[in-house]
Length: 222
Image (tube, helix red, strand yellow):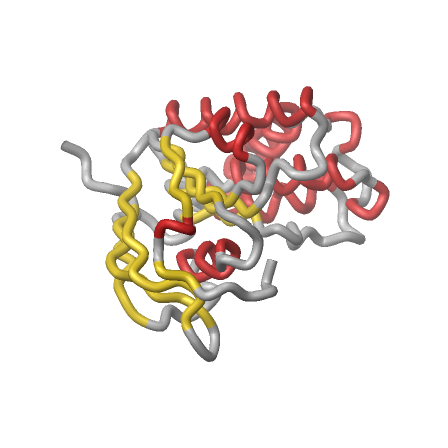
């Protein structure tokens, strides 16, 4: 049996005091797990802690990742470079997804493969015609698709996504859901997402975790 990609044991997260305590979760290769719950439970803080952006208060996060850069993160506020193009933003992910030293050791070959990966990934999210547009000229939904493409181009073993389907209409949301499910299943990776809408959580996830089932202290963080 394959090892879980991530194993979380008795985790407590928060800032000056715990928002969530006693959180336990295992995610297996090929699995998508959605975290749901009312606003203020600490969903975003939990995800950022698992991503390594916030120090945990206690507990363990055990990752079985084979390489550095194996975690792709889609934050709620996206973290895109607004003055740069779609191509440049997706390139930031592709740099982590392709090793400079390929079989031939040829830097030019690496550059070509990177360019192909970027164009193919941008096409997957339906933004080929916008590839040279600066992020600031895109709609909110288009920017979310760019952030998704950046994560996919990284070829991560674990994708962490915070409300990454918000601002997408049903057609685009359905397309991105299919894309992410195919990516996770075909690459034997895994995905942990925070999703406010239960219908979308049910549509994309293999398993749903309600944060309200754990010990929480309500906040105004979300």
